[in-house]
Length: 303
Image (cartoon, rainbow, N blue to C red; front, top):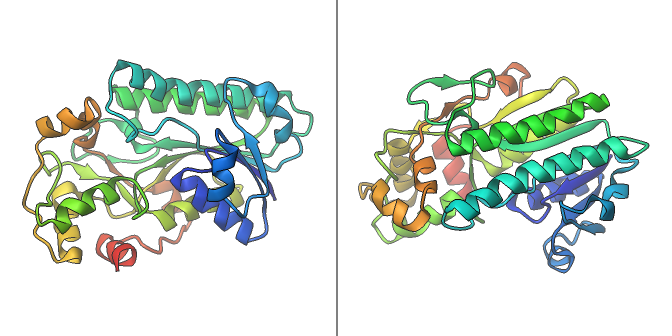
């Protein structure tokens, strides 16, 4: 297949480009920095400068491709949240998705599939409630961002295309993200849960997430929202305890929310959010999780 990927140099984008090219697909990477992308994505031969506000520069690259996978968006971990960065988080998703969908509508030979990233943050803080793709969005900032994001993506369906929005959980990888940031305190014997520890932690191994994207790409029966999470959610206390066990380190030094707010701003509230999401749609379609249990997933990554 011929596939366009935005946000190609991010954690998910890099892994996805590698898997797709290894299986023989032809990938075009949309990126803000082509020179940087050449080093990060040596297997991708076609790299296009991506400015989501200027579709005229890249719209023709969407003509005659089979699928578009849209991953681009300001990094939630990128900076301390303030009003300016929150605006950037929203606009980088809303406007980029809107312009991408409009560009697809304007090309002669349209792709058949549009896969757009989203996040389980759409559900907001829901305590112990089990959340499936049918659950309503939350009312907090991240919930409304994801709701807007998915609404923009869904407009592509008016072009007769299949649309999938993958609601990604906390991605476990040693390259970047939450796990990498948690490793150092554990290695220094001061690791422990974040916040009160009772909140549900919707995690997924990076390999299972990439397989979720590939499964959604290849399976025409997959439509709409898909929870990209492990079938075995755990509490933050259990996650920290299991991580400590794998690293042979203690896990009882709790990091209070007020301390997180000093470093992260309002994003600290999202880290303390309880989201017990399960991958109902993947389970119904017999998706095979290779790293679905936390201890074996951490062992796979760390040992």
